[in-house]
Structure formats: structure tokens, C-alpha cells
Length: 174
Image (cartoon, rainbow, N blue to C red):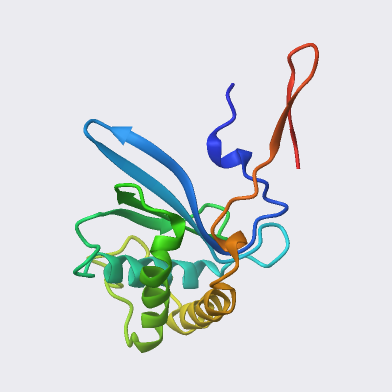
């Protein structure tokens, strides 16, 4: 079975940041999936589930209301490993081009007084939210982005190298 593209990223070397995960052509337009990584995989504790859920609601609401970007937002949601989020946008922009948007989005979390859509009629698990912890994670990510704005490693995936043996077996070298 073919290894999917996101598993070819070297998770032992990835740092928090904004990465282009994949670009797909769908009909006459492109769709790009971005990896918005808040935590170092397998090194840092994952994001608290309730805080992750709150960040999902808050940032999705922010993105879908941003006048410049809302028409291009297809999806914002958590990674299963709880180390970050996926953002899917129409078009294909460089990861660096998303810096201002995501900086602004995560910075906006501080001013949120109530998690949007956290009611039984709007949410499948409306009691599983933690606004204060989501603010903590957002502040942490904003500080990290500000400190590393000029660091290219927060915009470029570390790729695992695919090794092919003489007998055709495929291995990834991290």
C-alpha cells in the first residue's frame, strides 16, 4: 500500500510552524492543505482535547469571518495526533503568506469571551470546551510565531528520505 504524503514528513524533526502539506488540482482550481503545527510531535505534550475543541471553534469562526480570506476557506480542523490543525484553502499560497492571517487568528483568541457554537444545538460535544486553556495555547503559539518569524524552518517541512533497496523495498530514513 502506498504511504500517504503526510506520513513522509519527518515527525522527529518537525517544529511548530505553518507548512504546505499538499496541493491538489480539482477541476479548474487548486486546493491547498496546510499543516498548522503547534507542538513538536512525540516530544511535547499534545494539546488538551477540550482546549483543542475550543480552538477549533474559535479559529474556524475567525477564518470564516475574515473579509480577505473567508471566500477561500474550505476547512479548519484538528489533527488526530492533537499537535496542530489542518487548514484547507482554495488556491495555492506559500506557507509564509499565511503568517499574518494565522498570527492574527491566534492572537484574537485572547479577546474571546465565549466559545462560538458551544451549545447543544450547534455542537456534537458542547460540554467539552476549555476557553482558558485555549487562550494559553494561543498565546504560546503567537509568542512562538513572533520569535521565529524569520526562521525558515517554521515554513518548510523536514522530509524523510525514501530509500529503495536493491530488491525494491521502500524505507524512510529519518
